[in-house]
Length: 275
Ligand code: PXL
View 1: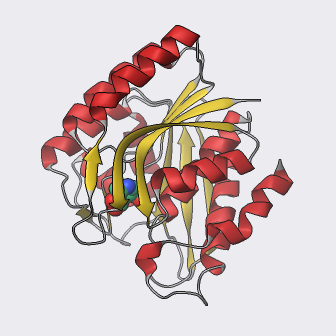
View 2 (view 1 turned 90 degrees about the horizontal axis):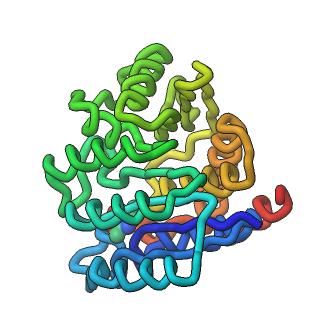
């Protein structure tokens, strides 16, 4: 069985980062080992979460992993909370990447804005960190910030998206996936580019109006599971768009507060039956 390390925070309430990555990757038949970077009572869209930074624990955990010879077929990084954490995780990647793939989701913003706590300096360092990846998966906001472009909102066409993808691979990862792409009304999905083969992929699903918290992490987790199983980039993106859409559809008649995330648990069986 393939084994990946999922490196991101655990936000106890609000379905994102590790509480999404572990069940999804497991359902796909891939062992998911958490390397928790911070513990939060909720993600940061709720006001005043309790936060305990865990950066100081990472050396102890990884030293022990080295001692027992733990190795990974892939490393998946998501939300990282500080410049120091990026440094520490960079070293973890150098020590543990082996023959495995490195998948970086540069989580730091959405809808044209950075999440609270992120600075332009963090954006610059994250763009550099993306050069360590084999595959990166920013949304349009994160891509525009990292490339120093004005946020393109929904004012773009297919060629603009191809241009953004090519520029993203210029950061150093050979494959880039761009999420939150909409090229026609009522449809939303992702585009991807493999600079090695020169192939582009585009996959769209039906758009449900509004924004759903944690769906970027759901999307990235399905991609990681599929890539760990050796599936091609285009198929990984297709599975991820499909599962993200199904998770949203499973939520739309049960929406007390969108900050609690989407009911992906109801549709996890889709992933296990594809196993
Ligand atoms: O879903 C991204 C995410 C992950 N982790 C934390 C967050 C966010 C987005 O706001 O706050 C702690």
